[in-house]
Length: 146
View 1 (cartoon, rainbow, N blue to C red):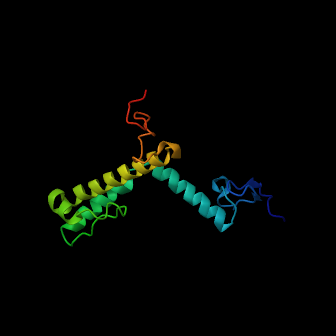
View 2 (cartoon, rainbow, N blue to C red; view 1 turned 180 degrees about the vertical axis):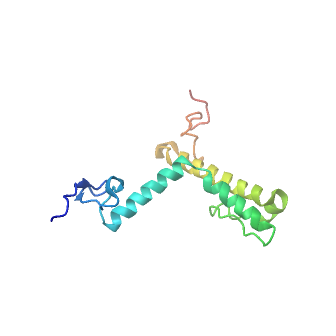
View 3 (cartoon, rainbow, N blue to C red; view 1 turned 90 degrees about the vertical axis):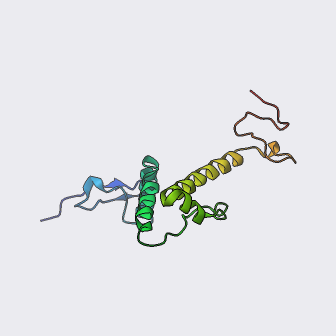
């Protein structure tokens, strides 16, 4: 008595053929290579984070606020340029949730600013600093362009 022939599938990462595990069947999308499984996990997690962008920010802020009642709270994890801000004062004035919100807002603003600056063409940068070339609203000489 021979075992039933399993249908071959193609790995979505390395494109090599593989026989799926009998219990997984059509749910298995990668071969047994750890690199392929890890890459698919990374892609799936990135897609989930893109679909639910604020989930972990809100969860982290809620967890930090709940801890605030019982123990001291460390400042939020922020980019190095935001780490110089007085987070202790912000937590005293706005609470833990408010300080976390400010940290998240600062992170988003810095990321957007860096991406718009990197989108500028190097010839648009003069001795006077960066022109607002990504927005296309101000030329190098400061005159409005349409």
